[in-house]
Image 1 (cartoon, rainbow, N blue to C red):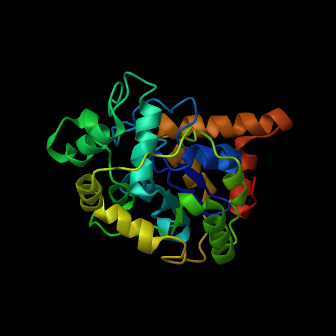
Image 2 (image 1 turned 180 degrees about the vertical axis):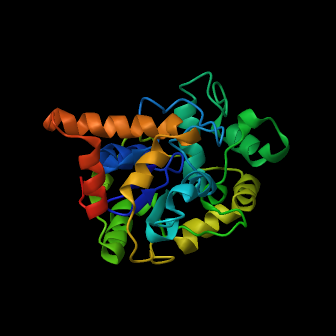
Length: 276
């Protein structure tokens, strides 16, 4: 997850949907990066999950206290990337098969067998579970409140549409795809299984086919962040686990260019809305 206080955007890193490419390209400009090496493989004490793949609900739970007296999440452009469900299952299969300890466990399985277990996983072992993209992006009431969803299979055009609608330009990430599967997914020969995938991931198909490539809601204008309260929030309480590391990482980047750079300089730049 990336959060830019100065440029007012939040990127939610949906699994197996180009999140590494976005984070590699735009992480250095963000004040908060959940998923850097210092915190990437640890569990956040508030949510019990790793920071990189922060869901929309976790975003609200973690960050609403920061914005309550200054900004709100609605003042940011919150966006993510959606992938065609069968292609996403293939990406899980192709990537996770390289890691015997990974979940869902895929070593030695045929792709169709993996898909079948993913479809049936509501009542099966958690090691076979592939979370839905709808669940990743939904709020507590099940609604999609995110501002924009891009389609992975048309990422360059999707990011151009986001740029045209908001002025935020992420288009260079489309040319630097990382962790790409080495082959296209095989066609599922079993028509019944294809139908079962449509049923199991029906809400994901709705996102993919009808919610992408258009601004679902415009970010609110106005209101500025109080940098002192932001600093206190970042470095205290349960959030310090991930976010103190993010602040320290940001400072190291700036001090590599300017040894006299201080955290107060960073906060003033944020308050003025200056991009890094």
